Structure formats: structure tokens, C-alpha cells
Length: 270
Length: 266
Image (cartoon, rainbow over all chains, first blue to last red; front, side):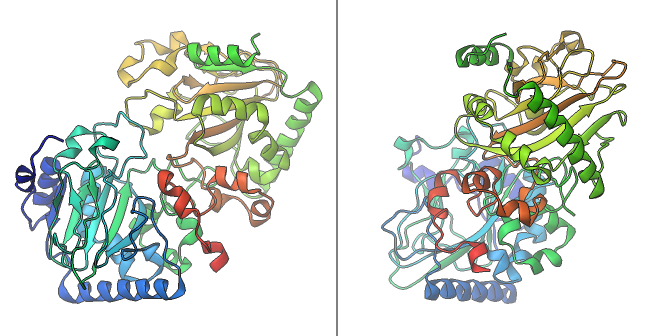
């Protein structure tokens, strides 16, 4: 990347209110910021459910680290398989606003590859700069192969470790090389209740949490085109009641309703 | 017929297809045909359809899915050392078992439509093999008994636009004696042939392998019975994607070290 730091900030799109405007941001910048998608009560429910799950994991020693996090980082916390932790998380995964982005950017059917939380803690370090579709060998196809929708359950600020992106990096249509790990990035600031939509080619990382006492929670729902293997093996790990009461759209996202791939006896599992 | 590893690789590079004869002896191939028909009966007994109208024009093509759940013989074939050598020659290290099915072309069986397995699924450009078939020839395979027809060198078509205007005229039958295996690059454009013999069945097994970031054709967690899954070793479970380490690639090592898997916790 050849952008100077002062140029970087001005390349972020402004927050927008509609899916249509968000899709324009996504096309132009590889990122869209939509405040207020979660109203106060829904936000509070999701937030309390997530912090409760995180506390349970920590208490029982079930925290699982992620290879793209730095090893010395002890305060950030990941929470996996959120669909099985509380009914508010399936609600986020199939929220109409989220799925409108998925349908427009990836088409339908699409898969939910994963939905997990990344909570930064005071002093928490950054993540390794990466693009989410790095598992796809290059050269990449012309269109994004996935979409990452971040639900901001706390304010995402430069101080609290908001996700940082290398603006316009998605236009390079390739993963960052090792010598580009320090490419200029800017914090994608967004208020609690917002969603941040990321094109799968955007180079990004967790930001450094420079506060003394604040955590910031984000739920990341990762969607892909239906040809890719999911990150979470839902058939192994999902709470059966989530599948039992799932909508048709959710069954598609999880892989239970499918065509061509993921079949049983040549037909869809349900 | 070329059989050295070097010449097999050369064939794959030149045409996209390589034939390795004699992997099964004549008696072994004949026994495998018997067991395949037994598996077909068992599959039908479960309510599984052996005619797939979306794939084949008539019922003279008999398809058997779920081979890995029906007879231990097929679990042995899908991981046969000769097959593994060819799979790794084409796909390298990071691959999975995507499907394992049978297609028995009985007299009167007709061709399916021309396709490349990779082009059906993966966006252009197709610059590297992301999938492949190992075809087990349980009977002799020729042009007149429904042998697979393919376009030699079509694994180099990077885009649909690279297809010739008259692809059907370039189709060549795979010819291989019973007991052979045939490696076919996932980018090769091919179709099943018509069986115009008077009374000869042509029995093939298609082991389909794909890169480990692609979604397998079969959901093995949902397909394989508990009794089958209990008998699988760790290597086979990983190649079938049955465990918690799914598409995480470089992150897999860490996620794979979960102290308690979802199964253990339940």
C-alpha cells in the first residue's frame, strides 16, 4: 500500500442508514458502516448474553485462542459457536439487514461459515493483518467470495481496539504479503448497535485496546459463497434445538438445506 | 501402457488423465462388482434411489451413493495407497474425500451432459486442480460400453471461453482394463459414455477428492451411520471432515487443540 497515514483516514466511507447506501460503500470502499441496526433493547440483550458466555468460558477455562491473534495477547477473548450459546445470536446471523448484504454481495444460497465474538480487553494487542478469504488460492476471482458482518456490541473506537482496515486494499484482489503487515490502517469507528460490513478481500485486523479498563465486544458473522467449507462444523457442534426451530433461511445458511454440495444420498439433508 | 509414477504424471500433465492398470487383480475386480451390486440392493433397501433423473437420461445408469456406509471394501479403496499417490500428485497435501459413488452403465445407458467437475462449482479462472476423480474400473472400460468420454488437454481450459466450438467432436473414450484406476484432473471436461453393447455392464466407482477449503459434495457427518463412524481412524475422520477442525487452514493447528471437543463435552 502506498497511502500515507493522513490520506488513509479520509478514505473511509461515512456511516449510512440504508442497505442500498451501504452496498454503494461496499463497492467503493470494501467496507460499510450502518449505525443503529440494533435498537437499545436488542443491543442490551445481545451484549449481556455475550458477556455472560465469555465469563462462563473464562471461569471454566474454555477460552480458545485463534492463530491470527498474537501469542502474547492475554486480555483479548474469543467466544466460539455463538449460535449454541443464546437465541439472540441466531437472530443476528439471519437479521434481515445482514442477509440483504449477503444476498447482494454473494448471491443466494450462501453459507454461514462461522459466528464468533472477539472481545478486546485493556492492553489487548492487535491481530495479524489479513483478508478473510486467504484460504482461496490466488489469483482470486473478480467477485468477493465472502462477507464479514461485525455487530458492534460496544462502541468501536480507536482507543477500544476497533477493527482496523487498510482502505482500498480490497482492490488489489490479493492477500497481504509478509512485508505488508505494517501497511497503514485506520480504525473503523462505529457506535454500539452498528454493523460494520467487510468485503472478504479487505485487509484488516483487530485494533490495539489502549484503554485502562474498557472491553469492546464485536460479534463477527462470516458468510461465504456455498462452495466453501465452513469454519465451524455445525453438524458436529450446533445445539440441536437451534436446528429444530431454524427458519428455512437459517437451514440454508447452516448447510442443512442445500443443492449440489453437502448432500446425503444425493439429496439435501432436509 | 504407461505405469511408472513419472509417466503417470506426464500423462496427467499432458492430457489431464492417467491410467494405472492392475491395481486390482481379475478376481478382486470381479468380487468388487458382486459387492457393488450387493451394496446397490442394500442402498435401495434403505429407500435410496439408484436412478438420478437430474444426472442420467434413463434408468440404465445405476448410481449408488453412500458406498462408505455400505461395505468396508469401499473404505479400503477410497484410501488405497495407489490412489493416494495419484491424489497427492494432483492436489498436494491439503485435500479431502468429497464423494464416493458408483455408476454402473447397463446396456442402453446414455451420456450425461458435458461438464468439468471444477467448472460446475468454482469461479473462473481454473488455473490449478482443486479437485479430481480416481475412477475404479471394476470391469473393462471402452468406448462402446459407456467408458467416460473426455477432451484430452481440457484441464488447461482456464475459462468457459476456452472451450472449442464443437467440444463433442473432441471427446475421446477412456480405455482401461478391469482392475485399473484412472486419475482425472477436476478441470477435465468429460461425460459418461453411452453403453451400446448387447449385454455388458460397465461398472465404475468414482472417488472424488477436493481441496480442503472446498465444501465436500457429501455431508459425511449427516450421511455416515454411527456404526460406520465408530470404525474410522483419526486419519479417515480428518479426510472426511468429521471433526471440529474445519476450514481454518492456518488457524487449524490452534483450533485443533481444543482441550475438549464438542463431542467430548456432550
